[in-house]
Image 1 (cartoon, rainbow over the protein chains, first blue to last red):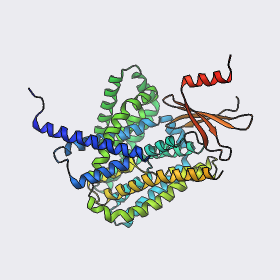
Image 2 (cartoon, each protein chain N blue to C red):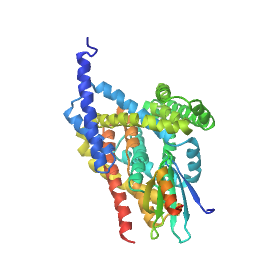
Image 3 (cartoon, chains in turn green, cyan):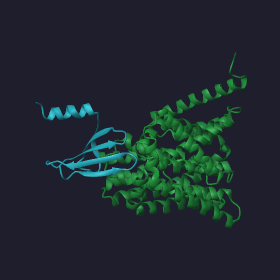
Length: 385
Length: 70
């Protein structure tokens, strides 16, 4: 008796092969001390040209969607509601400069390229949100967690995180489109729902988390995944974008449950997020890549300079010296997972064929250049005692 | 020990540091998962550390013993 039909066998072979390729890409990323994200992206782009995943593409797409949801859930879990509130108060000026400069750059670039407003708005989001994953890893790898410029960098990341809660509903309302009045109404409903949930999470999040304090790991994984998928589905159903629901559930999780969620869900997040990055690489039109390379490079230069300015200004305001400000500015350049999540929304909705390739090229450039530049900035200072 | 400075590190944990009588800044980062790192800051660039050493609970006991053998 066999449980596996022949079609399942083919799917298993493909998925097994895919996971092993992901393993090699992850190893390469770790080996070269750059984030793994650019490697997954490149792997996906190459796979898109060879096209080996015909029968299991649907399965990979579901995996990729779960990847988006878990990325945003873990972003929400990363910071407690109190941390969000405290940092908003402390770092609002730097956070506002960050948003004003880096969002406008992407938006302007999109409009200059002759894209529609929605596509340009998505590009603005992609250039605005730095990669908290890449940055946290670089800071840890380089032994900079204890540095005195580091809190200002982390604080900026928290504010970007909070901004995502407002940005995503607006982006998804724009993607749904329709008449202006209807779009404004959708945005208002989405923002209202997100704000209400945030307030509820601040108030009752810890109480809900306390209910789960004594749950076993098994129960906790099932409860968390169930709640995340339900909230994502409900948000998507209400046309607010699945990611927003997942993100808000993540914020509501707090205390010891958040700590355990990080341990339990992170491996799942890594698996599905890797699938998502590869899928994004697969689904973009690689024929468009050469045409967007120069604009992406120009955009990376401009936004890299703006990110550097923001990061070093925030560090200066927190009392860091010149060397510390240079380190804070350069580490802030790297973009990654959330730029791809935002671009993925547009690619899925088919708004602008050049958006996917543009953001892929932009992330490749900034993730690698950011990691290299911040090492250089650290070393230059070390050489001049 | 009254002049220990405590700084929250959102998403990481917290950091406590102080200046020794000899003028050296020393600190400890406590990660959310309980990992602890000993920090010694540079004099020429007081924002950065030239020692970042991860210490387990046993390591901390050993270190204390080394300072106060009895």
